[in-house]
Length: 219
Image (cartoon, rainbow, N blue to C red):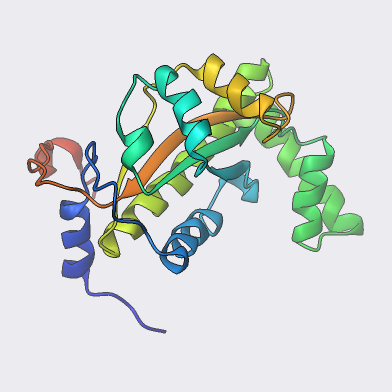
């Protein structure tokens, strides 16, 4: 197992910045972007739910259709890759979706029944997300941001830039992508999008709160 020097990792965090201007002629290689997608796929999620799908939007016509509903940002055209991350809308403990989670874990018989009891208590009492469809979707969306962060950080470690996007009309973007047959809107919805590529100019160093403002040690 090869591990990375902490200074190199922190340098990547300092380098990473929301990139709003890309070199439209410079493209990420297939191998490198596959690695970025793998960073998302291999990310952790609550109770191993993996309530996500990654749509890689490379079609130029589709990008143009989306652009007016994404604040008209030019990176919808110039970024090398755009990923729309979908969140599962109905990842309840008592659905076939959770049955698939237990299948992946190889749970059968009594072990499966015990796991189901744990999942039920978790969703109904501990985190209490079954009071509305929106609460359940928001829980799934929170998981997608773990994958998003890992993809952006991993990309930065490879010298690849990115920018997370929440500035879009969710209703219209979901409708366009669903109409393209890319997902079933009864099952999935866009949680967040992200552009990837190579910056074409320097980016002002990021401003962050001081370490002592955000970290407290209780000893």
